[in-house]
Length: 464
Length: 90
Image (cartoon, rainbow over all chains, first blue to last red; front, side, top):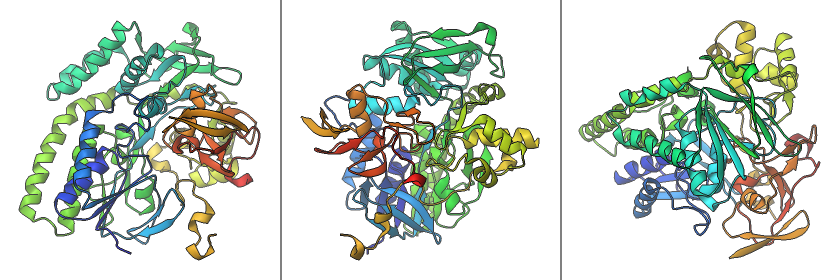
């Protein structure tokens, strides 16, 4: 078997940019990506171009560049990287259920991030989903997530998705932003080095205004109701710590609620490779520790993009390029002077993005009030259907680690492997133990990281 | 181009290039399964293969993510009404 020099996990802006940078230095790269086409979540390519809107030009540009480098870049879409063993051996399963252990000389992790949704009464009802989920339906197939849609959470992503829904002809009822309006009004002070992004944000707000979609600041969704599907949402104004004022609850009839409070880096492969992690709540939680070259603590493994700290698609592309160059330098395909010059240039671009990003991170920092929405009968672990009350009981009885909480309550034991519940369960444990979330640690990881069949692991000789 | 596939034993149609979850939404059905524990309805949640809420039985295989699977002609999709869908009950 021919092993590529570099395996890149993730085909979003970071992964694509890494492949382009390394391939230009003559290295063979393989991109492993679960999606149907390159692009990641942000630059999703339509699977039905007739129904879907025109894809984002930046994504198209990256795909075109990759297509020009086919001599060096192998793209494996629909493939799942579900484990890392013995340093750089990556287990990859294809859509037709063949599993391979790829053994590259360098590995670039660019897995991206998933959304953060706090548990609240009614959050498991069909019709309640992440903004990204609604976006995926529209971007790939032009399918509407529902008829009357409300968005709630924090951050500019909500505005972007709201505009895409409007363009797709969906009735957007309102956008609820948890943080206060004054905080947002101060943003331009931090964005003078990135006027393009500010203009983008302004265009979103303008479109919402013209479409008569109110953006209501300082409000959060506190509960959702419905029989088999969502049909009603309660929301309330919040104070600076996002504790809702339950005397001012408003009810809105909607069939779809998109909730997103930022993003969580997908750190599982880094963790499995035993890269040292650090806790950085402002960029989403546990991330691999990286040096200036984006190298992790494990020799030969680099990490780029939102999966190594949420910073958005533009930063992800720059980081990807840097990781690609670093891997090339590590493998001796580029000399030090060239590498240093390239790195300096990329660092300049990254530093330009930083002030606005930091300001956005600050505005969208999770506040403790978000933890006050759960009731004892609210599910916290969606997979195993464990309620907040059950989890709290287990914690009070002494299950104060991920492993013990899993064993005693089943929370975190399901198919998502604690990705959605742990950011909140760890806060519950920290509150009980009177320590910081950092002391609790990330959920333990286990392979396979995604559902694969037993048959896909069987040797060819045993397959019929 | 429309594709025909089988949803809960009925022949249904969707445009080509649709994911299973996209086809269901297109057909006006958002509930994809009932949970194993409390028979509660579930649907699309994260849309990117992470949360595993949209697991369905597809071509006799359980626990397939409907958001990560494209509809193929003749595909047999079962919206697990009360059937076991989580791994430990298979």
